[in-house]
Image (cartoon, rainbow, N blue to C red; front, side):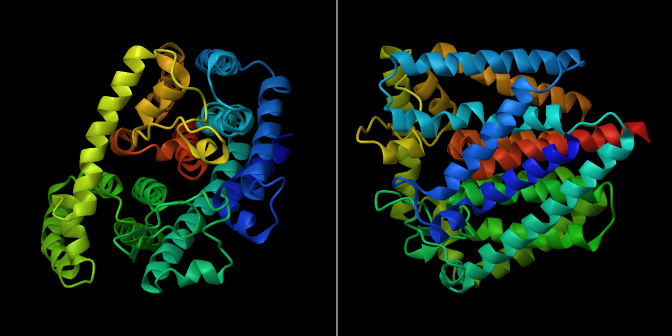
Length: 410
């Protein structure tokens, strides 16, 4: 069973990453892109194995997380009865609550073995996977910007793989934003933030040029995504991990060089506009976030049970009914879809997973940077509600937890 579980998770990770490409390469199924369908099918198999074919977890904390998760599943099903979500919206949106954030729990149940040897094998397998994945997509995303979006098109990526009404944020003021064809630029920027934290944390365990290369190329890719929240998160990550006198001195010396290189690059005005709201697009984006927050609070005050699952995400574009408020905020996204009461149960589920991991992870720097990344991304986008960022984010949290477990066993 263990080897089967590893292969299932590897398959899932590839489907998460390549879903847009599979949808571009293969014909649609009943008008639906094939990539998400394959991804959800694998998730369904993992869900069934985790719920029905796994023995009762011996660890008390894991049992509590499982109990809360079962409650979330029940509440999610109940919400369909009273919400205005169409079946299509619900089917697409339910994954954001039942599948993606439970990646950590599924891995905890299905991949943690009894012996240190098996755990080591699992850890190094996925460690090598993420090293390759992060560097590869960062390189593709950066080169794609240099080639004005032609590289991912050369690979066969079709930006309209989800239909004419489906659109991803891949440009800004006519300039291509790094996305590598695996997600929109927002999710890609935050994904690179996860990668940078991963390589920084890995450098505390292994001294390797791979870590340095990974940090450098993923930082460039993050910058080229032009995602403000991701860049802020990366800044805090550097500050947290470089917080020694010697490292901080090096960082301070390199800062003017970085500022100079940006100032002479074609992106100088774009970076300035993004962080000062000196251009119309950034100013409008900032003002809209305030309006979105006010509209969300106003709606929830009158409709505490929310709008319905799938109404705020990708499911909305595949439905005839449009109930999206467009929050650009993960917390509002949760409450608008689940309602105030069920939303609290879901947030408690997320919190319990964080507490389980952070109780065992020994690196305070990882905990601080990973928490800040979640807070920033949740405050400024709903990206973590979707597969590309959400699955990778929660799986890396599991892998770091497993790393600390192995360190304590040796």
